[in-house]
Length: 281
Image 1: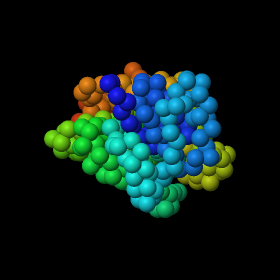
Image 2: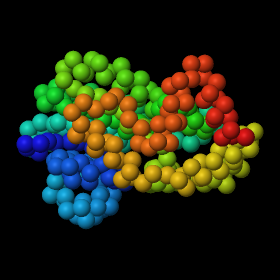
Image 3: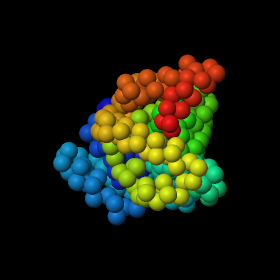
């Protein structure tokens, strides 16, 4: 790059977002690292200092569920840097439970941050990205391609994100904007820990779903034992940020590629059902 380009990343207090912010800065990007609560920025600032890129990272407050927060942050960024070259939609929240035992408010909350937050951010930045022929990169999940037990609301949001982005991609391309989704599998980060789940209480209150939930939790604990690190999962995000023509869909590991391939070749849905049935039995 002949001059530093500017990228805005949401959800950078931990995990993939933090690693992507440091990676983007290391790759030479001026990085606007946003989070809902900037009091949680210490880990990012420490990582940036250790990577010797603290001067390329600016922390700003941004709540993707608040239109006024989005507008205020973008106004500051454009005023300070003259424009924006890329957006990385990373902010998200897990939601574990099955619909009979979840409230509609739980489902709406999951959709609000994981889907509508992505839509709102993308809508807000597109005029700026048209001007710079920039790109939108969205951290989705393998759960955006394969529906997973006890993740109904979360997977619904991620499926919606992928449908939205796949539909937007050819339209955005006509005005010079690339669109990419990143599909990680299990990542060893604070994303799941932040749920603060009381597993014994969940099991005690799960009624007819207790056996299935217990099997799902055991399987999930095993999968996170072999999880990618945030740096490993963020590396394809940085590759997509700098590539001349990034593909629409990128998985972050061979396991994720194999897992997503299950649904992409599954015309009648039986392969996915055969796989996920084993998670709850």
